[in-house]
Length: 282
Image (cartoon, one colour):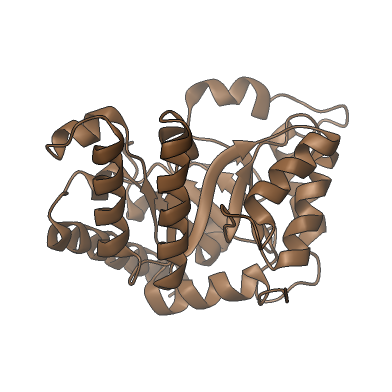
């Protein structure tokens, strides 16, 4: 099976043509209830299908949160497999929000699950945790290159407790987050227009306090319900703002189950992001 075009090339094209927005698919119980659905497989399937059908033909990235499907066991995973297939068929890139992190053959198995092209859960990218050491991610980094996929590595997350690890000092004085960002930059060296290794950096951070120029995409959760707005992006990301993929979940999903309302909310966020990026560059 031949590899896809490199992930950075495909993502840049999607961002430029559809707008740089990622919408999460997070079917947690409260959202299912708000949509008038039961917290069961039927509700999960209806929620997921509605979201994919409404958004997969217009947003750059859809980001299913694996945990909300895993909680239903094998039947939930089957719904996730179908969502990944249908979203990719409609032109959206799929970022599997799995935040996997392990070592050796176990990391290799995670890489095969999400990044091997003949896997039922094959996604365009997956989120990873590097805090067993960046080198522990090597099986996933190598598999991504083989398949034309990407990875997004946790760097500076929006949850407050993340700082106790991410802002801690490494042996050479750099923060652990900066150490991880520097590893990502090295992986992306020479790639154009973007490398395959992205960083996860919260949009709610204010000043990130780190060098975010990694020659790769920057996934920015926190837009919408977590309090950040598109207008905050230039302050957080500075000169790297053009490579930011802002992620919104509840801010869009709260407008369901009406498909037109979901589309209108996504279009509004995408427009606000375009305006913020254009303002920062102009």
